[in-house]
Image (cartoon, rainbow, N blue to C red; front, side, top):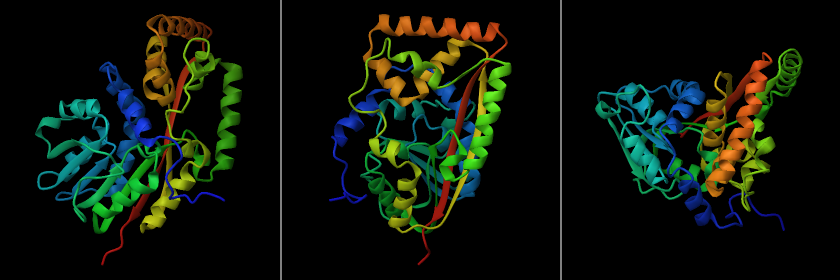
Length: 317
């Protein structure tokens, strides 16, 4: 018998959440810098689509280092307020300390709390806007998390969330994706290129332990955006609209290019956290040498980064 989408997933969700949170323990300050460098344009798109304005009360679900929450707080001050929640205590502490680069966090109407997105300890109908920046693919039960977003949102409120998608085919842009793929192949014939995160993943098996359970829930690999869209509609949201945004971020430093992949990609970050210092060092040396050869040959180190941004609203009473 086929399992209904809103039934609990079969693996240990609490174990998954604990491990997901623990992968952020001990990350260097450059983690925040890479998140900002690769994805701030997505945060800008989210805030624009949310149509944030002075007086809005905003919830950021899966706030991480606080980049989206801080950006939103700048737009809703002086009378609005933003609450960021994340299940990683380490990330919440970093956000409270002002981790987002270039943002005056200490002076903004903003607070952070350690909470589970699937079991929000927040009152019904409390927020005008709910945001979620690239977090939904880390929720073992996205239906529960999105239902909670609906519950805490005021009637007439706005939802804007994103999930990582390197290509526009995630929302049906198959022709555009095919053309982009051909363009990349032609360019690579003229100039050698390494593309993240595949560049490190291609050699990681030599040194890093494999995972018995992916760092992202299995549903995202199988169903991706289809399940997210279904969960939004089933929760009761209306006027759903999808947009894809993406950029190619070029690195000039092999060391930074390697480090960015190990920090940003969930599977690589988790595997590296389970490896020995020697294994990590050998992988780094191998990859950095490869990247230096590409640069010497006139090539490029490219990190394609993109997301599907979904906008919807809760009907007014």
